[in-house]
Image 1 (cartoon, helix red, strand yellow):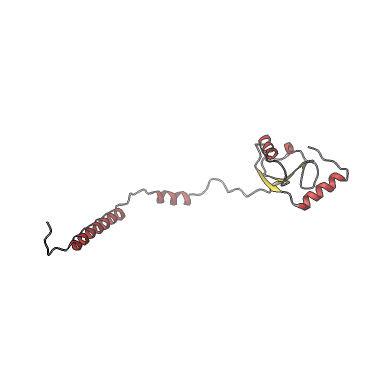
Image 2: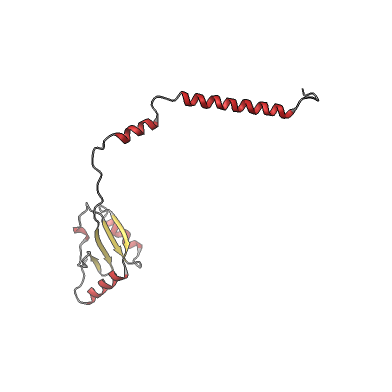
Length: 140
C-alpha cells in the first residue's frame, strides 16, 4: 500500500536496477563458463589443417559459337559440340535474338558440359555472316 510520502518512480528505478544487475550476472556467467569444445575452435582447426589436394586453377574455356547457320569454333570453322573436351568449360556465344528454348535444348543435350553463355559481339556476327556468304558453308 502506498502512502502519501512514497515515490512511485523510486520503485520503478529499483526494479530496473534489479533487472540490469540480473542481466550482468547472467552475462558474466556465460563468459566465464564457456564449453571446452566450441564451434569457433573447430573452425580454426579445420582452417589450419593442410588440404588434401591442391586447388584447381581455372581452365581456359572452349569457345563455341551457336549461330543460326550452325556451330563454329573460335577460328570460325564449323564445329561439332559432341567432339569438345568435357573436362573443360564451354563458353557458348549466342546472338541476342536466339530463342531460349534452343539454348536450353543445347544444355539438355550436352548436360555433361560446364556451359557459360555469352552474347556475340557485332564484330563476331559480321565475321560469321561474311564467311557464310563467301561460300565456305557451315556444319552442325
